[in-house]
Structure formats: C-alpha cells, structure tokens
Image (cartoon, rainbow, N blue to C red):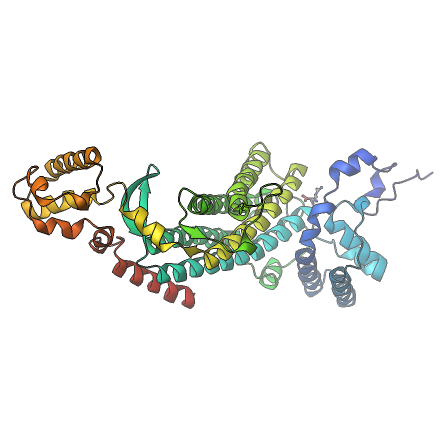
Length: 466
Ligand code: ARG
C-alpha cells in the first residue's frame, strides 16, 4: 500500500507530513527574496530556451513555459501575484504559479538545475544591476561636488588637522577631496562587478548535471562573461557579495566623514554653510531648531552598512562546501546595504547641491589661529635662506609673542618682527593673509585657486565623458 505523502509539490514524495509552522517561519525567505523576482524570471527564461535548444525539453513546452513566465511577470508588476509563505522562497513561488497557469510543461523547467545554482545566478544578476545603479549615483554625487567646487574654487576656509585650525584652504579643494575618494569607491564597485559577472547556472545542486546542457547559451543570454568553471565553487561562493559589501562599507565611511563635516559646518560654532528648509528638520519642543538629520542619518547608516559586511563575513566563514542553508542569510544584509548606500548617495547629492557657503564666516575662520604661521616660516626659508627647522623655531616665538599681545600675525609691526631676526623686511606681510597663503600653494595637488579651478573643470569634463 502506498503511504500518505506531503502536499509539497517540490519534494512531497519523500515526506509524510507537512513542515511545522516553526520550520516554515525560520525557513521561509519569501518575505525578502521576492526582490529577486525579475532576475529569477530572466534566468528561468534563459534556462528554458537552452533546454529546448539542446533538445532536453520540447520546443512546445519551452514556448509555453516562457510565455507563462512573461505573463507572471506582468501580473507581479501589477501587484496581482500573491506570494505564499508555504512555498518558502521566490523560486518555488514562481514555479508553482507557473504550474497552476500552464500545467504539465511547468514541471519540466527544473530539469538540469537546482535552486542552488538558481539562487546563485539570481543574486549575481541582482547585485550586478544594483551595482550599476550605485556607480551612476556615485557619478552624480561626484559631478555635483565638482560643480560646487568650481563655484567655490577660491572660497576660503580653514583646513584642519586634529580638528584644530591648520592652514587656509579653499572650499573647492575640500570638496574635490571627496570626488577623489568617490572615484576610488566607484573603481572598487566596477572592479568587483567585473569579477562577479560569471554564470553559476548549470552547476546543479553541487556536481553539475547529466543532461547535455549548453552553459554558453545561458551565459550569453544573461550577459555573463563565462560559465563558472567549478560547480562546487559556483553554488557556494558569495565572495562577490563580500567584495560588493566591503566596497559599499568603505564608500559609506567616506560619506559618513563628509556627513560629519556637514553637521559641524552647520553648527553654531562653525556656521560655515546653510541648508534649505526642505533638507533639514525641526524640533517637537524647541521652536528655533533647524537640525541636520539627513547628514546625521548618512553618518549613522555607515554603522549598518559596516554591519552588513560583518554579518556576511561571519555567515560564510565556517561553511564547508558546498551549499548550506546558512547562505539564505546573505539576502537581507545584501539587499539592505545596496538600498541604503543608494539612499545615502542621493542624500549627499541633494545636500551638496543646495548647500550655501557663508563666505564671510569661512574666510574669517580661515585667518584665525595663526593659520598662516607656516607661510611665515616658509618665507624665512625662501627669502633669508634660513634652514626650515630654525624658521619653525623663530615663527613659533613670533606666534608666542602675538598670543601674549593678543594680536594676529599680520598686525605685528616691522620693528617688533626685526627683534626676532633683523633681516626680516616689509615683504613678509605679503604672505600673512589667508588669501595670499592659498595663492602660494601652487604645488601639484595643492589648494591654490588656479589648481582647484583646473581640477574641478577636469573632473567635470571627465565625468561628462564617462
Ligand atoms: N531560498 C534559498 C536561498 O536563498 C534557495 C536555495 C535553496 N536550496 C536548498 N538546497 N535548500 O539560499
């Protein structure tokens, strides 16, 4: 007598009872992997086409499968495809729906494939797509920064080290520093996207398949560069996720540093910039407040983006080859990181676009705290042929004198200056203002307005041609 079997269409044959509610709750991934819908359909269409071309299924079945999948895609996009938790994940939801819609031929779609190579394929397609969105967003932010830098190629501001006023710089120069960082961030994403663009499909559950499939065909159809060479590697590797997550984490750390500066620049003590009302928030109790929540959230989100990378590293670290269900835990952190970095890039772009520098405050701050003391020392070297160490010492004594006398460097008169070295002459005043200081920083990569204008224009040109 044949024993009762489970209703589960995918593996019911071997089971005599339904999965418990508990198992279903832990095991089901449909609540998040529905995001792979488009990629799963695309990969299934490529697979069905290949199966027919290789005469593994009939042309007729393949046509009906592909038409069915396309109909399901339309329904899904209209919100008319209800996902069932009992069917565990997106792969089984789609296959089961296809079976409902077209009957018998649907049961042939899974020939020569497994959910293991299926999910690895879907995720690569998904990450590839999102990475290209991230690359585009990074470029927009770079362009916005370069344009703002061009506008402010000679806007003075203090440059800091140890968060103490160091030397005068231009705002354009500061903004362009982030354009450079973002360019490396973009390079990392481009680089790992090239590496992830390989096809796991056709690796089956672990060992390949006994069907005479043609992996080059699905590779071409899905825009991959080549079939992955080892089936075990293909179904179990997620280093493409790790690479993407680490590139995202690094990028988010760069954005977080910049967000922190925006918070500082907006604070009372600095008052360097203004942001429009529509990008700031009020307080529920303090009527006067205008808070930089957007920048703070970009800073805060770097925490969860770093977290996503750590989650993935830890999930993968102890896994023996090949597939283990732990790998299902790759999706939520990956999806979350991809969505959030895009949001952060958009937020930063909006803030840069609309930020207005308070030019007066910035240039006053650029002159404070003896910010041109290095220029004074450099003058002593250049004009009096003093060794730099001696010039540093003499300048330090001059600064000390100014502190005691409560005056700025440019206010000390020539007679007093001569007390420190009798060769000092009136020419020295030519290097003591913040403006003169930046103008003299003409070395390659330096902050002189001429350099900055050229660098900003070069970036704008380069980004336009990308
Ligand atoms: N939902 C699963 C995942 O995300 C699909 C693969 C399931 N494979 C398996 N052998 N149970 O990883």
